[in-house]
Image (cartoon, rainbow, N blue to C red):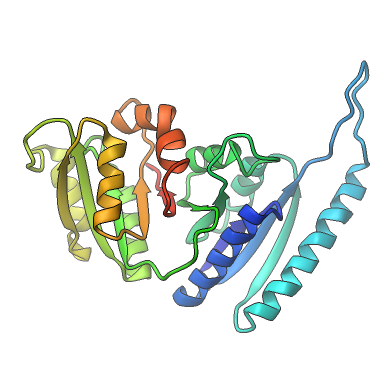
Amino acid sequence: MAYLIAATDFTDVANNAVHYACQLAQDLHASVQLVHSFMVPVSFGDNPMPVIPVDEGREIAEERMNQHLAELRAQYPGLSISGQISFGDIVDSLDDLTEDTKPLMIIIGNSGTDDSFLWMGSNVLSVMRHLRLPVLAIPLGFQYKQPRRICYATDYKKIDKQLLEDLVQFIRTTQAKLHILHVSAEANGNIPETPDAHLLQHTLQPVAPEYHYLHSEKAEDGIHEFINTHAIDILIVVPHKQSFWESLFHKSLTKAMVKSCHIPVAAFHES
């Protein structure tokens, strides 16, 4: 059975993302696995020591997880929901958990800030950048609605065939309409006549996407404009290296898109 992973630290930001995951799973006829990675606080001083034993930290985490699972199962009685507790960094935990079995997507909360407690702030960006699976970040307060219009923002450079095939699978699973957006400071609005652009068009042909061009001096401004005018439900970005998107990701897919975007942002990755 297909499944979604919902990462949680039991905050309001995470809880909102968990509910999004549960409702999406219902629409996709999938199951949900909650994942919580706990850390043990360390005292400061000449000899830093854990404030509590790891076993005690695990017991606290398991108690909170069991309570959360009970509440969710009561609210979504027809949905299969399980829980997983791990110790350590959330990125490493998710990487280990998905080494053998691959979820459709990992869903996390996006607090819109980089200074939140634990990992729901800046670490959301680490999850999106370093995991090799699609990661969907849900803004705080965003209310679920079934995805009908999905936008893939691309610069038509370094197109990865496996990534495109993953995108085709995602579009078929959600049965949403795919919009391909290119934002450029140049006046020419044509799709580039390059092997990468041809690969993109050929691979995505089975899901019949619509192609769009926007002239804008700042890519993030053009993306926001398109999201608003076309009622986009999910924005897909690809943080590949040494390109337009890599520079955008460094300075501001974190700051300008993930931080300010009012809709869910999904990171798809190259193979």
